[in-house]
Amino acid sequence: MKALVVEDNPDVTEFVAIALQVCWPDIKMAQTHLGGAAAELVKTECPDFVILDLNLPDISGFEVLRQIRLLSTMPVIIVTVRDDEADIVKGLEWGADEYVVKPFGQLALVARVRAALRSRNYLSGANDLILLGPLRFDPSAGQLVSESTRVLLTRTECLILRALIKRAGHVVTYSQLAESVWGGTYDHAADTLRVYIRRLRTKVETNFPGDLIIRARSGLGYSLEARA
Image (cartoon, rainbow, N blue to C red; front, top):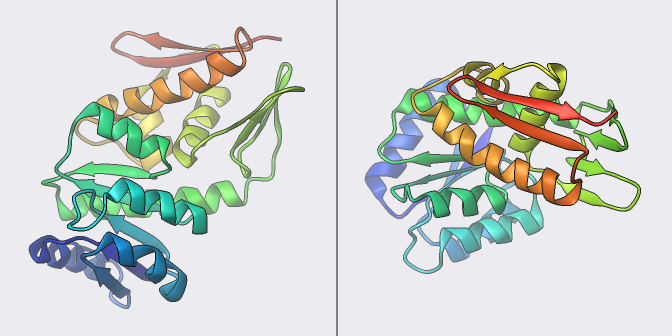
Protein backbone atom coordinates (compact mmCIF):
# COMPACT_ATOMS: atom_id res chain seq x y z
CA MET A 1 0.00 0.00 0.00
CA LYS A 2 1.27 3.46 -0.89
CA ALA A 3 -0.26 6.87 -0.18
CA LEU A 4 0.49 10.31 -1.58
CA VAL A 5 -0.21 13.23 0.78
CA VAL A 6 -0.40 16.67 -0.81
CA GLU A 7 -0.46 19.04 2.16
CA ASP A 8 1.53 22.16 3.12
CA ASN A 9 0.98 21.91 6.89
CA PRO A 10 3.58 19.57 8.45
CA ASP A 11 1.40 18.97 11.52
CA VAL A 12 -1.49 17.78 9.37
CA THR A 13 0.85 15.61 7.29
CA GLU A 14 2.16 13.96 10.48
CA PHE A 15 -1.39 13.54 11.82
CA VAL A 16 -2.46 11.82 8.58
CA ALA A 17 0.68 9.67 8.44
CA ILE A 18 0.15 8.36 11.98
CA ALA A 19 -3.47 7.49 11.24
CA LEU A 20 -2.55 5.58 8.07
CA GLN A 21 0.42 3.79 9.67
CA VAL A 22 -1.71 2.56 12.56
CA CYS A 23 -4.14 1.05 10.07
CA TRP A 24 -1.53 -0.15 7.57
CA PRO A 25 1.84 -0.58 9.39
CA ASP A 26 3.70 -1.33 6.14
CA ILE A 27 2.25 1.59 4.18
CA LYS A 28 4.68 3.70 2.17
CA MET A 29 4.20 7.45 2.16
CA ALA A 30 5.02 9.99 -0.53
CA GLN A 31 4.50 13.64 0.37
CA THR A 32 4.69 17.08 -1.17
CA HIS A 33 3.60 20.55 -0.09
CA LEU A 34 3.40 21.75 -3.70
CA GLY A 35 0.45 21.06 -5.93
CA GLY A 36 2.64 21.42 -8.99
CA ALA A 37 4.63 18.33 -7.96
CA ALA A 38 1.60 16.13 -7.26
CA ALA A 39 0.86 14.96 -10.80
CA GLU A 40 4.48 13.96 -11.37
CA LEU A 41 4.48 12.00 -8.09
CA VAL A 42 1.31 10.22 -9.19
CA LYS A 43 3.19 9.08 -12.31
CA THR A 44 6.44 8.13 -10.58
CA GLU A 45 5.18 6.77 -7.24
CA CYS A 46 1.94 5.10 -8.43
CA PRO A 47 0.12 5.55 -5.10
CA ASP A 48 -3.01 3.60 -4.24
CA PHE A 49 -4.76 6.77 -3.10
CA VAL A 50 -4.15 10.50 -2.61
CA ILE A 51 -4.89 12.75 0.37
CA LEU A 52 -5.24 16.26 -1.08
CA ASP A 53 -5.48 19.67 0.55
CA LEU A 54 -7.10 22.49 -1.42
CA ASN A 55 -5.13 25.42 0.00
CA LEU A 56 -1.64 24.91 -1.41
CA PRO A 57 1.09 27.59 -1.77
CA ASP A 58 1.52 27.33 -5.54
CA ILE A 59 -1.67 26.14 -7.29
CA SER A 60 -5.21 25.30 -6.24
CA GLY A 61 -6.00 21.82 -5.02
CA PHE A 62 -8.81 21.79 -7.56
CA GLU A 63 -6.24 22.11 -10.35
CA VAL A 64 -4.25 19.28 -8.78
CA LEU A 65 -7.40 17.16 -8.76
CA ARG A 66 -8.00 17.95 -12.42
CA GLN A 67 -4.46 16.92 -13.31
CA ILE A 68 -4.70 13.68 -11.33
CA ARG A 69 -7.95 12.76 -13.03
CA LEU A 70 -6.24 13.10 -16.41
CA LEU A 71 -3.80 10.43 -15.28
CA SER A 72 -5.65 8.05 -13.01
CA THR A 73 -8.94 6.96 -11.43
CA MET A 74 -7.28 6.20 -8.07
CA PRO A 75 -9.21 7.37 -4.99
CA VAL A 76 -8.64 11.02 -4.09
CA ILE A 77 -9.73 12.19 -0.63
CA ILE A 78 -9.86 15.97 -0.22
CA VAL A 79 -9.05 17.24 3.28
CA THR A 80 -9.54 20.96 3.77
CA VAL A 81 -10.78 23.72 6.05
CA ARG A 82 -13.04 24.93 3.25
CA ASP A 83 -16.55 23.87 4.23
CA ASP A 84 -18.50 26.05 1.78
CA GLU A 85 -21.09 24.01 -0.09
CA ALA A 86 -19.90 25.38 -3.43
CA ASP A 87 -16.41 23.98 -2.76
CA ILE A 88 -17.81 20.60 -1.71
CA VAL A 89 -19.91 20.38 -4.86
CA LYS A 90 -16.96 21.43 -7.02
CA GLY A 91 -14.67 18.85 -5.44
CA LEU A 92 -17.15 16.05 -6.02
CA GLU A 93 -17.98 17.28 -9.50
CA TRP A 94 -14.30 17.30 -10.46
CA GLY A 95 -13.87 13.70 -9.34
CA ALA A 96 -12.95 13.56 -5.65
CA ASP A 97 -14.05 10.37 -3.93
CA GLU A 98 -14.43 11.96 -0.52
CA TYR A 99 -14.49 15.51 0.90
CA VAL A 100 -13.37 15.73 4.53
CA VAL A 101 -13.49 19.05 6.39
CA LYS A 102 -10.76 19.89 8.92
CA PRO A 103 -10.51 19.32 11.77
CA PHE A 104 -11.21 15.61 11.45
CA GLY A 105 -10.54 12.53 13.55
CA GLN A 106 -7.96 9.97 12.56
CA LEU A 107 -10.46 7.11 12.72
CA ALA A 108 -12.89 9.04 10.55
CA LEU A 109 -10.18 9.65 7.93
CA VAL A 110 -9.16 6.00 7.88
CA ALA A 111 -12.81 4.98 7.49
CA ARG A 112 -13.15 7.27 4.46
CA VAL A 113 -9.98 5.85 2.91
CA ARG A 114 -11.13 2.28 3.52
CA ALA A 115 -14.52 3.03 1.98
CA ALA A 116 -12.96 4.63 -1.10
CA LEU A 117 -10.61 1.70 -1.65
CA ARG A 118 -13.32 -0.90 -1.00
CA SER A 119 -15.87 0.67 -3.30
CA ARG A 120 -13.31 1.24 -6.05
CA ASN A 121 -12.53 -2.47 -6.02
CA TYR A 122 -16.21 -3.34 -5.75
CA LEU A 123 -17.25 -1.22 -8.71
CA SER A 124 -14.30 -2.27 -10.87
CA GLY A 125 -15.39 -5.89 -10.43
CA ALA A 126 -19.06 -5.20 -10.98
CA ASN A 127 -19.73 -6.29 -14.55
CA ASP A 128 -23.48 -6.51 -14.22
CA LEU A 129 -25.41 -4.24 -16.58
CA ILE A 130 -28.62 -2.98 -14.98
CA LEU A 131 -31.61 -2.14 -17.16
CA LEU A 132 -33.84 0.70 -15.99
CA GLY A 133 -36.64 0.98 -18.51
CA PRO A 134 -35.03 2.66 -21.55
CA LEU A 135 -31.75 3.20 -19.66
CA ARG A 136 -28.71 1.01 -19.05
CA PHE A 137 -26.61 1.48 -15.92
CA ASP A 138 -23.04 0.17 -16.10
CA PRO A 139 -21.46 0.62 -12.63
CA SER A 140 -18.04 -0.71 -13.66
CA ALA A 141 -17.73 2.00 -16.33
CA GLY A 142 -19.59 4.61 -14.27
CA GLN A 143 -22.10 5.25 -17.02
CA LEU A 144 -25.82 5.74 -17.40
CA VAL A 145 -26.80 5.35 -21.05
CA SER A 146 -29.83 5.72 -23.30
CA GLU A 147 -30.01 5.35 -27.07
CA SER A 148 -28.89 8.94 -27.58
CA THR A 149 -27.23 10.03 -24.33
CA ARG A 150 -24.32 8.86 -22.18
CA VAL A 151 -23.76 10.36 -18.72
CA LEU A 152 -20.65 9.71 -16.61
CA LEU A 153 -21.14 9.14 -12.90
CA THR A 154 -18.62 9.39 -10.08
CA ARG A 155 -17.83 6.47 -7.82
CA THR A 156 -20.07 7.77 -5.07
CA GLU A 157 -22.93 8.50 -7.46
CA CYS A 158 -22.71 4.92 -8.71
CA LEU A 159 -22.85 3.55 -5.18
CA ILE A 160 -25.86 5.70 -4.31
CA LEU A 161 -27.67 4.78 -7.51
CA ARG A 162 -27.05 1.06 -6.92
CA ALA A 163 -28.47 1.35 -3.42
CA LEU A 164 -31.57 3.17 -4.70
CA ILE A 165 -32.06 0.66 -7.52
CA LYS A 166 -31.97 -2.29 -5.11
CA ARG A 167 -34.99 -0.83 -3.31
CA ALA A 168 -36.64 1.01 -6.20
CA GLY A 169 -40.04 2.29 -5.19
CA HIS A 170 -39.17 2.15 -1.49
CA VAL A 171 -37.47 4.59 0.85
CA VAL A 172 -33.74 4.09 1.34
CA THR A 173 -32.80 5.72 4.62
CA TYR A 174 -29.84 8.02 5.19
CA SER A 175 -28.14 5.34 7.29
CA GLN A 176 -28.68 2.70 4.57
CA LEU A 177 -27.17 4.99 1.95
CA ALA A 178 -24.24 5.85 4.24
CA GLU A 179 -23.63 2.14 4.75
CA SER A 180 -23.56 1.62 0.97
CA VAL A 181 -21.13 4.50 0.39
CA TRP A 182 -18.85 4.51 3.44
CA GLY A 183 -19.51 1.19 5.14
CA GLY A 184 -21.26 2.91 8.05
CA THR A 185 -22.83 6.18 9.08
CA TYR A 186 -21.16 9.13 10.81
CA ASP A 187 -22.05 12.60 12.08
CA HIS A 188 -23.43 14.85 9.32
CA ALA A 189 -23.61 11.93 6.84
CA ALA A 190 -27.12 13.04 5.85
CA ASP A 191 -25.83 16.53 4.97
CA THR A 192 -23.04 15.06 2.84
CA LEU A 193 -25.48 12.73 1.11
CA ARG A 194 -27.69 15.69 0.19
CA VAL A 195 -24.81 17.17 -1.80
CA TYR A 196 -24.18 13.90 -3.65
CA ILE A 197 -27.89 13.36 -4.28
CA ARG A 198 -28.32 16.86 -5.67
CA ARG A 199 -25.53 16.28 -8.19
CA LEU A 200 -26.87 12.85 -9.12
CA ARG A 201 -30.40 14.15 -9.46
CA THR A 202 -29.23 17.00 -11.71
CA LYS A 203 -27.41 14.59 -14.02
CA VAL A 204 -30.26 12.09 -14.17
CA GLU A 205 -33.25 14.39 -14.43
CA THR A 206 -31.56 16.82 -16.84
CA ASN A 207 -30.37 14.17 -19.27
CA PHE A 208 -33.15 11.60 -18.87
CA PRO A 209 -36.29 13.59 -17.97
CA GLY A 210 -39.06 11.32 -16.74
CA ASP A 211 -37.02 8.11 -16.98
CA LEU A 212 -35.64 8.22 -13.43
CA ILE A 213 -36.94 10.31 -10.57
CA ILE A 214 -35.16 10.58 -7.22
CA ARG A 215 -37.57 11.73 -4.55
CA ALA A 216 -36.58 13.11 -1.14
CA ARG A 217 -38.51 11.65 1.77
CA SER A 218 -38.29 14.34 4.43
CA GLY A 219 -36.42 13.19 7.51
CA LEU A 220 -36.05 9.64 6.17
CA GLY A 221 -34.00 9.38 2.98
CA TYR A 222 -34.69 8.99 -0.73
CA SER A 223 -36.55 6.74 -3.14
CA LEU A 224 -36.11 5.98 -6.84
CA GLU A 225 -38.87 5.69 -9.42
CA ALA A 226 -38.02 4.30 -12.86
CA ARG A 227 -40.23 4.44 -15.94
CA ALA A 228 -41.13 0.94 -17.10
